[in-house]
Image (cartoon, rainbow over all chains, first blue to last red; front, side, top):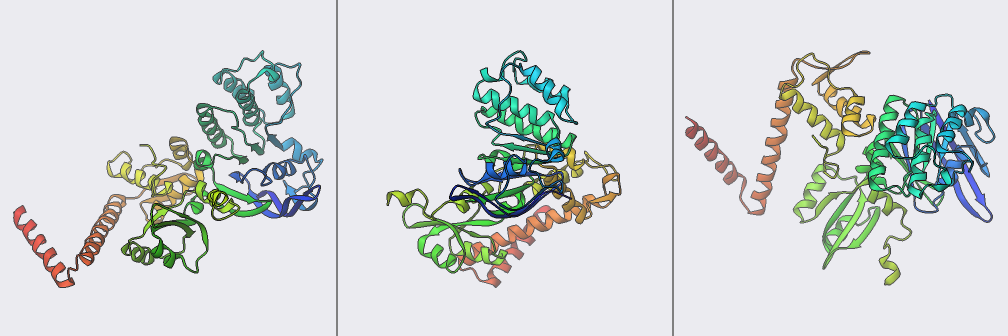
Length: 298
Length: 128
C-alpha cells in the first residue's frame, strides 16, 4: 500500500517554482531519504505532505486523502523540523505529556528514557536549549509519537557526531520495534544511507532519481586514467561528472551499463574502475554545471 | 564482525558472506533457524530490507530454505554449496589474474598451459 502519492505536484512562491511536476509514491513501512541541495524544495515538499501547506497544482494523497486541513492525516502524521515552536511556559516534561495526549501511539516510557539518556533536564524550558539540544528534543518527540507517517526534516542539524549516531540507531531500533513509514531529509547521506531503504533525490523542484540505496550504489561507475583513454571510453555516453585528475589524467563518472567483459577490456587499457558512493552520485547529479566550483575560477 | 561500509562489496553481499561463515564454522547447524532480517538489521545497524536481500541470496542458492511463517533455516546441503561456490569464485578469479598477467607478458596459450601443468604435477609429487 502507498502511504504517500504525489502526482504532478507544483508549488509556486511568488514568481519562482519551488516544486515542478513532482510525481512519486512511498510504500508503507519503509524509510526513505529525501536528498537534495539547499533550496531544492525538500522542506516545501515535506510540509505539503504533512498538510501544512497547499500545493499550487497537482494531486497529493496521504493515507489516500488530501492532506491539507485533514484531521485523519494530522492525527497520523508527525512533522519534525527546525522551526518547531513550543509554548514557552511549559517544561520539557510537560511538553512530552501534552504531546502524548495528541498522538494515539505515543510511547511515554520511550520519551522519558531518551530524555534521560541524552541528559536533557525535564524541568528545563525548550527556549533555553542549545540548537543541538533542541534538535535532540524534537527528535525524541518524533520517535515517541510513533506516527504511521513520521517526517524528519534535517533532524540532525546542530547535533554533535555522537548524538547523530545515537539518533540513527534509535530510529532504526524503534522502526524495527514499531514499523512505520518514515521520510528523512538530510545533507549527510553517507551517515544515513545504511538505515535507508529508498532514496528520493530532487533537484530544483523536480525528481532526479528515486530508487533503493543498493541500486543507487551500482547506478554509476567512476573511470580514471590517462585523459585520451578515458575520453575515448566515455565518448557517446551519458557523462554524469568529469574532472581532471593529476597530470594528463581524467576522472569521469558515467552510467554503469558495462558488461563484465567490457570492464575487463577497460582495465587492460590501463583504466581504473571504481564504485561511486550514493553520496557522491547525488552531489554530481545535482550540481549545476558539470565542471563544479573549478568552473567559477577558470 | 563489523561491516566494511566503504568496501567495493555491497552490504547485502557482506551479510550473505558473514552468514555463510556462521554456517561453515558451525555456529548455526543444519535445520537450525538463521537470524531474521530484523535481527541482522539490528546487529549490523542496517535497513531490514538490505538484510533481507542478503538472506534471499542464500535462499536462492538453496543454502537456506523457507518455512512459511517461521523464517529461514539452514538446508542440509548448505556446507557443500558454500564450499563449492567459494572454490569456483576463488579459483576462477586466480585463473583470470594469471591469464591477464600472461597476456601482458606476451606468454602464449600453449606456454601458459605447459607452465600450469608442470606446476600442478610438481605440487602433486611434493605432496606424496
